[in-house]
Length: 100
Image 1 (cartoon, helix red, strand yellow):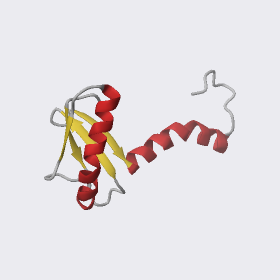
Image 2 (spheres, one colour):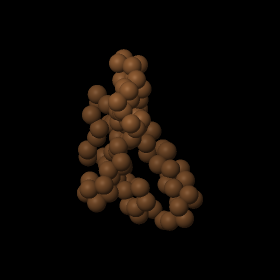
Image 3 (cartoon, one colour):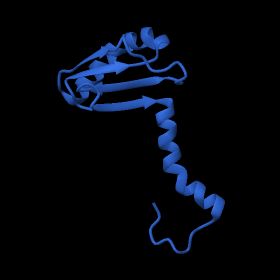
Image 4 (cartoon, rainbow, N blue to C red):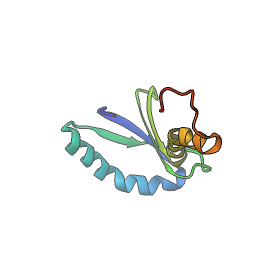
């Protein structure tokens, strides 16, 4: 996500932690991209307390969103491992031409 201004959303209980690491995150992005950027913490809207942690970064009023929560990461891992899980449960499909 290479945008000049982003909005960061976190859980209400993580606000202090996110505020403390935000300047170093901005510096890391600026060093990696060479672009000037800014990030603002959303203090009006929070991730639900049932969320296990992480942040949601958005730009353009939420039109572009990067969801980096534990649940989103676990969903990505589960989707990536689904072919292996299917193979372990049902065995190798001999009719399958491509393995993804």
